[in-house]
Length: 543
Image (cartoon, rainbow, N blue to C red; front, side):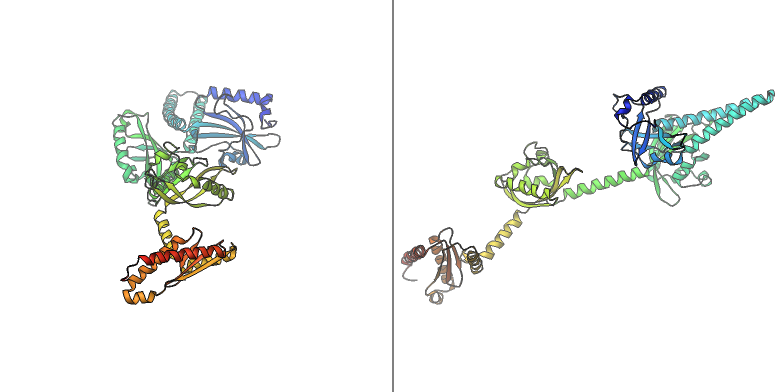
């Protein structure tokens, strides 16, 4: 195996072919084995050298394939140079108990590879139970044989041989019992027996002496106790051969630890059945805490999304902005239920955007994605009821490691009312509240702008209302205001679209006429004068 190249050329290597046949035969002869393989580390990366899977198997690993799910413990045999049994590990194939053995170069003494066997955790636990029961029975049987041999005074050599076998059996039992990656205990009815392994003591955080004085109901979480008692009652009544459940045990410091407990019947004397049994306990605290944290996170996210003042989304970066996720705010914003827009089932989100800004929005997204910047843009959409709404979209791109845009995520909120208020404020800021024409401030800004842009020629007309003070004194300010309004209306009808009419004083009006010659401005002035004379002719003589 030292000659393996860790690539496809190994397939033609006779040594590889021999190892491959042996690995396949090993698995076929040991049906309880799920996987068997040899792996090595090269520059900190774990690689498969040879495995027990046929080439057409979905789990087949060719020589040199990276073992991406390798953990820190997989490198331990290279350092300890000793065989070991790993604690249960859960991956995408299931939950396993693994046995590993280092492969040592006898010339250099170097560990260059590790042989590993993966057993299903359920099988491993079952084997522990079966071997424990068998060993207890074997021990009793051997004791009977020894007693018989003693009474029959058999030869010392035969007695010594049996004693050695007994020691080996006890050693095997104790090794499995103590090295098991799960907690194991013999339980008498409601009390722990003195036979408990170190792993169980570590899980429960207690000593053997302390545990022997406790009733297991005393250290079971109150919320789990009744379910455990119900199952235990059926077990002791002989209705079920055993049971398993997830439950919490209280540790000495008052904290609780989540475990998976399997209760199994011991093959012992009839009068002790239902009282003495085997408990196998696994530590699942980290997994349960992670599940609870995930559940709380999902609950918080759902609550947040359902109360957002708008529509949260995740969509593809395509021509339709194909939605993959939409919050409940979709209906209030668009008039469509989320499922109508998801994957363009009824309508694509792009179809809701007013046509004249679709390309502008797409160009802006392309710009910010290239710079890895957030997206912020205001635009109009048309709802299911044909209502036009102004929205503000804030989002960002989700990228793969190679820089490909995987999706877009963000929030779209309704700013129609704010937009209307802003338009009103802008209108009021630029217009005279009485006449509706532009005010002095806007006039000054436009004059400055025209000065800078030089749209020559530029002409200016100035006008005021004769006798406005006399009108105010004779008929009141209301009549004077009406006269101002009518004058503004008359002048406005005489102006062109490009002209800018503003009320720049109490009875004064100013007109900016860009691109207008002297002759043209004279025509506009004459038109205004004529319109005013016609209006004056219509005024009753009494006024």
